[in-house]
Length: 279
Length: 280
Image 1 (cartoon, one colour):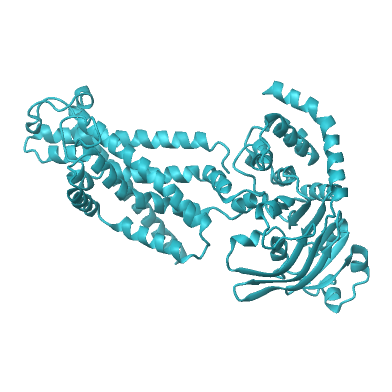
Image 2 (image 1 turned 90 degrees about the vertical axis):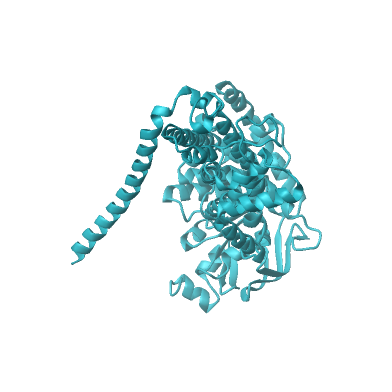
């Protein structure tokens, strides 16, 4: 009987693993099968040519650059706000502080808000301020979307840190700030994980940037010009009735996937270089 | 890298002796001791330490023994004000360190902690190289000159007998050391901030017998210059290295005295029971 139980559970586990792998392979295969023929050098080096929506010349350089601008800008803002916040609730507030549980609770709620709501909120705010769809609007709205993700995951990793390191530092006569500086070194891989999660969510999201960053065939030259993004390119291209253009959407998807891969690997690389002496 | 090392080693032997003299001189001038008056510690509603009155003799090893949960570690933490980090801990009473009440109104916590080198139960190297681990303390306390920092690091690594083991890899991660080496590194790191007291919170309980022996030998060597207070679980360790014993039970000091007298001629029934192993 016990033997059977063991066997059944093993089968369930293997099935679960296979389903995940299968779905991943299926998605990647579809994207590459349909996109690869359309993925020319023009796609990544040229701006959309005339009659793009009908599926003709040019590429999606506008969207590649726009997406990178937006994700880098919003990452910078999120890191600048997330790191101090997480350090504060973990090392400055007492362990059972009401304020820190309130912050964690609000982050959990923010975490669950759909991205379209952030988009709508950003849009409403921009109308109120009299700003039109722009790179800056996109950066700020995506920052709002990814901040809770980054904070919550970085917070979880920080909470796992044992008390020994902070205690060791304090007993050496370090101030809180000196202590946090050393702890950040230790937490670097954790921060990178949080950043990767944030990138994954932020760069692929269409709903936040739909109203706030707008769309353009050009590369934005300043923060108040509209910016194109890859998810929106994919969205518009898929909406075309022409199959050639639809295939370009899959090519754009390949580009987006590769960008995420490059960002992930470089983040991992830099994190391992920074934390050569990690425990 | 190699050339700097050679340069460093050549300058160390002489200055090391110089440092010893300097420390001895300093200790002669200051009246170095810890005196505790009516100390009570509460954690939330629990009365952890009850009316502790105590004088800890200078330049000797004092071991605090007692069963788990008797307040030994809490007591040690009151000496370097590590309870400041937990608001649920309430402390009343006076702790005089060098004739200054460290719970007085105008006391700088950093200065108090700097006087107390803490050796924790498990070694916790900082996420840096071996060299940086020892250099960290002197640096945050204002020693910036490279030469001075180098000298300090090598002095204390030599003092704990680690220098010869790690001299080729002082720039590599401290976490690659064995756990016994890590504990000696932590001791060197603590000594590098030039404390007057050394607190050990079961500092050898995670170590193998050989590493334990090395640390114990270091303590015996250190007591010439420092006042050492150790919390220990093992009676045998207390017997081996302590000059004075404090026996605590349920947050109270039951008996305290010189080691030999304490073990050979305990006065209280509770002490006799504990020593005979009736409870632990």
